[in-house]
Image (tube, rainbow, N blue to C red):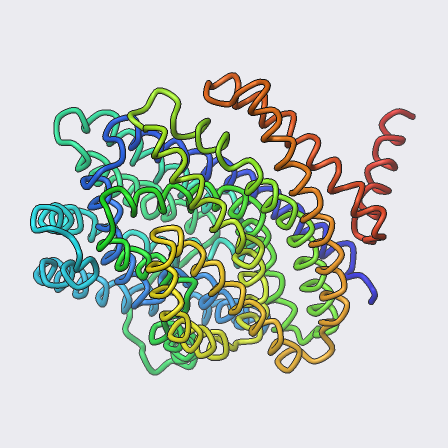
Length: 528
């Protein structure tokens, strides 16, 4: 299949570099955020209540499609820009910001009033003291959703203008707010200090800073409620399927916390820490590629350049799989030294916490490639103004996966929830990928499957060898100290990545060969 034009891929690569740097820093701060929790509070019923307190605010954000806002708004905005109707684009922007701002204020106020009842519904297994703590933390964090949503609209405008720097700073400031809130306040008000940081970080980074970024992108805001405008109706048409759906992408954390509330204290915390570690490389690769590529995919669809859209989507998906497959198997192989390094250094975490979090990380990492791939595949649908297909298929599969959560949590305890999560996201990704050629005719699905088989084979072999090497190094060097874990991880990761690249070369994965060829050319150019 012909490659997408070099100019388009160069723009995506440059944008990906900006977003990836931000995501890497954000994920690093996210790990530091969880380390701060482990350092200040440890793992216990209080931390379970803290993590559970995110459920209602997250659900509220989901009800207004806040997590998918850029995916919904960018195609609408890009449509008017492509038609040369910039004034109309800003008019729709103003309508969305005005109407949804009012909706958010009403929803947050209602959630504040009924928080006790709603929290008992989402974590029914909590004891009364845990439930009361979760209610208080929930009420404190709920207003942050207003900042997230309005800031999301402001960020979407900047993405549509191919301006990624200011939006990329939002998660950094948000995480810094949580860390500072915990470190400065936890000694006096306990885990509540982290919730104060959530509120401060959201309003400063996700809202206040994005006002500056949107103005820099030329945003023109005039409050209005022109709800009959075709652009606003298109926005609602794209948003409503996501608002009404319950895709596993959004519902997984809620389901895990619901079942986890019936398990022993700290179970929710172990699962949260394991998933946070899994999300570090996932965000750096999957989120960066998805965020950076989507404005260009939406632009190609609006300009009806469908062949180029398919080629760009194909290259993006293959690049993601090439990176995430070996990273996922290496993460599983190195799970215990990884957890020790990030959570057991100068904290209140015990050996039980390390082993329990490592087990959760292994089962979550099985689905790492699917968490990344579904984001790219879904964006193919969203770029084509189709939010209904991912929403309907995601909701049906989430419902079908509920018995899997129930069965595995009874068979495997808390790690069964992590395994059920991975099974669900893999099935969802496969189904969505199978449907995609019908929505985007000409998409080379068969070539991607062959690519996946080769890359997965290389990753599995490299992962097994890395696991054996990690176990051997653990016996001879030991990873129960900071220096030991760094040494073990450095040696085993270098060996694992090198072996994965060699196997990819042997299996004739063209993308690896092209990458190495470009690297040699760049090196020769520098030398000469």
